[in-house]
Length: 230
Image 1 (cartoon, one colour):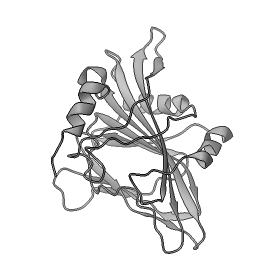
Image 2: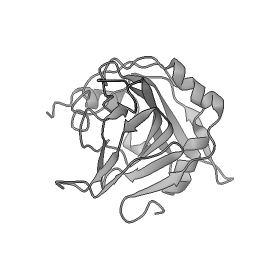
Image 3: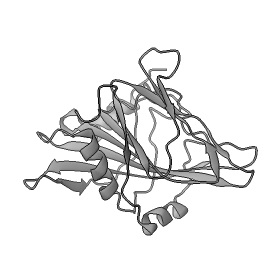
Image 4: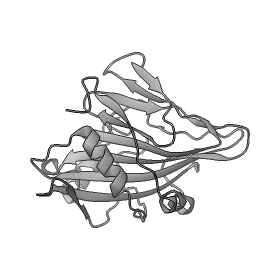
């Protein structure tokens, strides 16, 4: 697979349209993560390979977001109500699909998380309150679109059971990391104000799962909501 034997790869993103960046300014606050420093929208799609070699994006009916507690101890096992994504991220996602080398032999389902994390003097923005974790999907794309007056936010990649990360780096605006989520875990250090004034980090996270594994719908939600792993 193009994603590489180490289980991750870095890619450069295409130019991000101004209206896509502007869409972050109206994100609602995330009531479940970040203690008031995170703002978020969320949507889900079904991906189907086309005869021309591209992918068809089918926007799925909007649902509450549910994640297994075994993957997110901070906010797993509950229903999280988010407004749907309004911006069109399909161009950026297509770049990630190519970098992963997504199997065209079947359909896929993706979760799209549009997140802004804000920081100011004396108030860092936690990026992964759940700590070092797997998301539970097959692949994950974390794309950084903007870093405005922030420091910190180092991405760290971990082998299962390791005491320290095997890779640490700060993604700049216009970069994305593609992860084999089953092979490696990840976390990100808190984002900090660079000079005491407010700043923010704008990202989009895309989680890829094979459609047959049913990460969408009533069956998935019931299983995630009944997850009691602590």
